[in-house]
Image 1 (cartoon, rainbow, N blue to C red):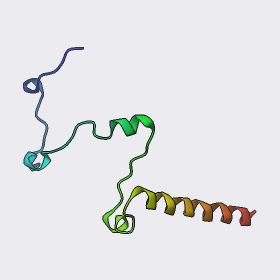
Image 2 (spheres, rainbow, N blue to C red):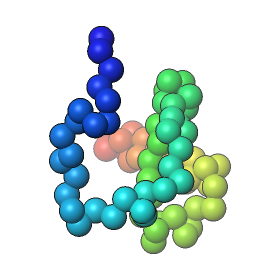
Image 3 (spheres, one colour):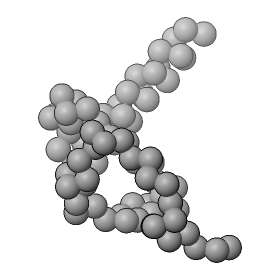
Length: 76
């Protein structure tokens, strides 16, 4: 497969995008986690305030799963 040079590409970026704000990104930062099957989820800032780390998010979700299972058992 032939590599495409940057100069050969059509520039389709909208003029309102400021590329100077995109500096510092790391290509493939989460590639290893993705390959391992880890789900990455972005929390909204108002929700993230209540969860300082991944352990607290997992604990809350496990609790919610337990409540949901109990509700299903009582519904039948």
